[in-house]
Image (cartoon, rainbow, N blue to C red; front, side):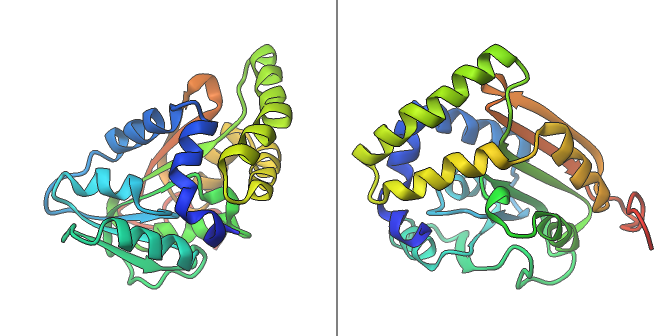
Length: 228
C-alpha cells in the first residue's frame, strides 16, 4: 500500500492536513534538536522529508522504512545529500547494533507497526545511554467538541479529498481507521515508559490532533523496565 502511494505521498499529506504537516515536522525537528556529529535514526521516514530537515544540521541521519517503494522514492529525491542514507528496515527487528544512535525519532509510523511496543523496545536497544526518543503521532483531541469536528472531517471530508489528490484513495481509508483505533496520548506515554524509557513527556500539537512524545534512555537500561 505504501509503495503505491510513495510518488504523491508528501503532496497528499500536505493537502489532507491543510498544511499542518509542515508545522508538525518543524516541531519534531526542534524536539530532536539535531547537532553536527550526532548519529540519528529517523524510523518510518517515508520519502525522507523529515530526514532532510534533520540532516541540514550536519548530523548523520539514517532514514529507515519498511516500504521499499518509499525508500526508492527517497533515494531518488535526495541522492546528493552525503550525510543522509536510506535503509529498508523492520521496526520490530532493526538491522542496527546496540547503542548505535544518539537520538531516534519516528513520525506517523508507529501506529502502522503490528507490534508497536516491540518497536519502542527496539528503539531503546539501538539508542545510546542518555540518548533521546522523539515520537510524533496522530492522537485524540481532549476537547469533546473539537474531537467531534475532527472525526467528521476524517469520516466525511478526508475520503473525498483523498480520492481527488491521491494515487490510492483506499490507502487513506486505512489512514482514517488507524487514527481512530490508535490509543490516546496517556496510553502511548505508558507504553513508552513500560519499555524502559525515562523522563517520558508529551505535548499536544494542533489541539491534540497530533501528540509529540519525548523520552530518554537511562544510563542503566534496566531502570524503568517492568518485569525481569
